[in-house]
Structures are given as C-alpha cells and as structure tokens.
Length: 187
Image 1: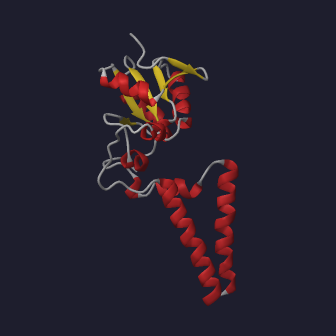
Image 2: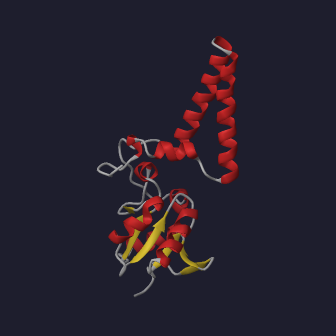
Image 3: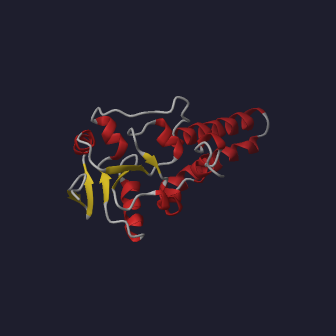
C-alpha cells in the first residue's frame, strides 16, 4: 500500500499539511488520529479525525485499524512523535506524523471543525486559574491577613516547577474536570 505521506524526518514518516490535504482530497486510505486531550480536540480539529489522547493511548489503541496508515496529529508535533514511538512499540507499522501539528495545518489556511461549546484550551485555563490565585493571594494579604501572600508565592513556585520539569499539576487537575472530558467518557 502506498504511504499517505512519505517524507522522512527524524526517523519517523511525516508529511506537511499541504501534502496531507492533497492526499485526503484524493481519497487516500489513511486514518487521522488526534492525540491531544479532549478540550484541544473539541476546540479545533481536522475533519474526520478520531480522538485518541496520548495519556490513554495504550487503552485506546485497540480501536485503531492496524491495516490502515495512521496519520498522527497533535498541537505542534511533539506528542505525535511520542505517540508514533508508543504505537510502534505496540506493533503498529503504518505511522505518519503531521509536521507542525494542527497549528501548522491552521497556519496553512486549511479548514478545521470545532465543537460549538468547546472548553477553553488547558493552557488558557491554567493561566486563568493561576492568575486568579495570585490575585486572590495579593488581595487577601492586603485586606485580610499578610500571611495570604504565601498563596501567590506557592502559585509562582508551582509555575516555575512546571516550566523546569515540563509538567503541570494544575493542568492535569483541570484536564480531569467534567467540562474537559469527552461526553460519555469514564472518569
């Protein structure tokens, strides 16, 4: 079977948004697999893509067709490459990463579909909650008790840790909230 996209990059098959769009328009037999979280997926995705979040990829892999080429999509490409490595370890062999992810797709002016009541992206939710906690700490320290300033310091330390380790406990907690879960998904 001919590859949906055949350019090689970093040892993993990849394709540009333009190449993928041309192949999809020509009716290529490939499946689009979006490995972002539900909130991101709901906020904008390539039409026809299937959600298989990276966090639960192993359990969701049973729903993927091993006979078809899988084009992996994330925000910018990092999670797609990780998903390709994990799926390859599970025996999937027809894997392609969309270069630059959905951001490159949108940057190329290609269409996305969006749920009408999609939640905000997790990064935006984290910024809102962190900002509100810092503001609350400053206001409570000024008007109630100076010890509340530690709330702002705690949030600042958490954001610093998140940047250094490239993890985000607040983001993980927000991802588990009901508004960020796929309808019908189990908690």
